Amino acid sequence: MGTESGRVTRRAPRPGPAVGPSRREILFDSAARQLNRDGVRDTMLHDLAAGLSLSRAALYYYIDDREDLVFQVYRRSCELLARALGQAVNEERGALGVVQGFASRILAPGQPQIAAMTELGLLREDDRATVLALFEGVVARLGDVLDAGMKRGEIRPLESDIVARTLISMIHSVPQIFNFPTALGAEGEGDFIALLKTVMAHGWASDRRRVIRPLAIDLDPLRAARVSAFDRQGLAASKREQILIAASDLFNRKGVDATSMDDIAAVLGATKRTLYQHVGDKRALVTACLERSFAITAAIQAQGEAHQAAGAKALDVMIAVLRASAETWLCDDIIPMRVGRGFDAHDPADKARLADYIDGLGQRFLGYAERLREQGEIRPEIDVVALLPVFPTVAAWLSKGLVHIPPPQRPFVAAEVVDVHRLGIAPL
Picture 1 (cartoon, rainbow, N blue to C red):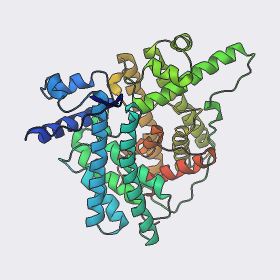
Picture 2: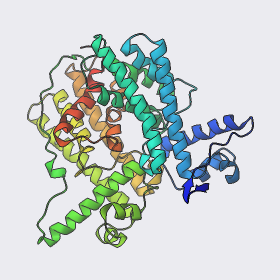
Picture 3: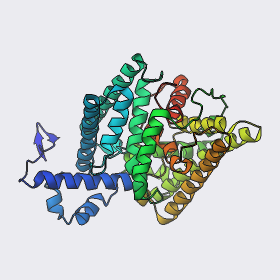
């Protein structure tokens, strides 16, 4: 590191000897895999060095610190996305062919693994701006492909920016799904990628022209309550809720290990003592945020089950639940903690509960899918078990806070995101 006019500046990338680029690629690929599996962890550099049989000095030949490593991996991932999309644009015919070719190239066996960029909030401001500029360039180019496809009648009418982000989110999800401890086995990755491309193009719905009956899911009970200044007990509960929302947002953006109690206190304009008083230490805070996310999901599911008990169709119920779940990421007064990321950053008790929760959630959606199959709402060739991991992938990008959606537009955005996997992008 050096200084220029008193400002800390990053060293230029080191050219290294002839073996440098190869070793650098191995390092960044290993780091991408670790980020997809565990998120940013305090032990990240130690684990990488040990896994690659590198000394810490050798590791620091390529990077400055943990934040620099994450920056370089994210930048490399954006460059890989841009290259794969550029090749697809130049070599494939039609917008649909470009989208599927893009997915095929970036997810091809033997290709470097891309990182999902779920801890952008960890990066220094200038590094974050660099990564976001590269990423937004990919989104804009894919959006242009979709816009051109709509004009030529190759793509159904859709909101190109939202759908471009959703398609990239689905691509990003593949390494994460197959790195997660409770996920599908690695031997099924090729089949899953094929299914994902099918869903991107044509969705899974048997009748893509089927009109969804809008079922109301009330999110108001999930919002931070407004209480009277004279309600001491209500004020204490409100402060706790605000702490959990702020912590969940930071955990989503920076990762669990990389977010300190000081970070959370600074966002709230509070002291760490206030956090300890209302929630406890960081481990208790993480547990509370997880439990709150579980409760939010359970509340949405309960409303869906009430609709089903009243005679609603399974498809209408599932779409209502998925849309409501997606919308919670956009609400500043809800923001659940994203579960399933940074699995090993949790303590053993939380990991066990998290695994049980994800398994239970999968079983619920499997129940929805089986009812859809019984009612003829899913095409016969779609494997409903393999389809389950697709459901959370489409809305994952909403938790990153990359775009601000005004409240009146949030239901529309949530519906547009969910319709990507129900309908795909091909003409109806």
